[in-house]
Length: 482
Image (tube, rainbow, N blue to C red):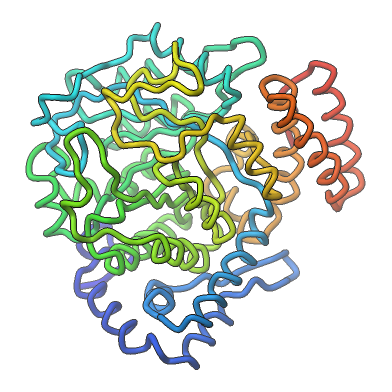
């Protein structure tokens, strides 16, 4: 039986409810009156508390996704852009993945790290190698990392992950520092989540891959990840362990996308119902080629137009969540979806273990890649590209370090008040990047953008302080924040 407040996976992600939702959506996909009412419900509204959005239920959002009326799709896109700007403005948060180890005991059929793959070299970073990778990332200009690792209790125990986090935070190179470490590792115990929390991580990220239980078990034939319930209930254990920022995601292309979409939103509703805090982020990765993995062998791939619509509908349904797109996607694809809800992107990424240190911006090792990188531009190029499009590349980590996480972050975000902090913080961290890492052309573009954007800070006192901080950054000082 479907119960969003249940802690049992098959009750809060209930197969019968998903199928009933898809049936309802198919029956109503041409119901213009219903679709218009759903769009109207989702619009941002000014209230005494600020700008607020009602969001949508998984059923309502599924109707939008199923709708194939072109003019309605355009209305969805316009609304998604409006919502994104209301909550996140024109900021795009920057990050990079750091792969620690590709040792893995699972047999996931879509990932080249699977245990049976004997062609891929196995590698695990030493702490000295972690240090070198971090310095290389700092020299690009990154401040926020997402660490990745295969699941292997012998080679990658929680103690190894904790030691790596400690090393990452300890490295101060020139003006560089990693200020936030997000963690994307396998589902684990409440005790281990407590250890990650105490280590000072940012967001705990875990992709479901697929919410369809039968497909999940088929795609994960052996290894700890085979346990559907344990994996699906991981976010509840993370919350119990004190981690109040969690990130969801499915791997689009493994299962029917409409099923995944509805279930993903049900998971978000579950977190809100049980913990009072929905997902801090939702990622939208698509299955990509890698080593012995051919995405053409899977028959649920989605085209770019469908992908864009999924992103827009997630933004409308879960207006407060950060939405992440990685370098799995091409420049053209990323360009298209930035307006539709994306608020975080990676830049200059390597998906290899040890892929940064010793390589130029143009070089990249391929032997241990988890997936092919489509957007292979350097971080500087991505930053310049974003600014040319009118976005503010942000390296801000202030909310995490000021304790604005979980329900504290959500209360500010859901009323649009977070803009008062995030806009000036984005400009100050961009100024740091321009001073320390940018090419002359990127720096020129960025200085002009900062000058324009400073005048958009509505509070005169905050605007004055931000200008003073930016001048101090120019004079050599670092790490100011609201």
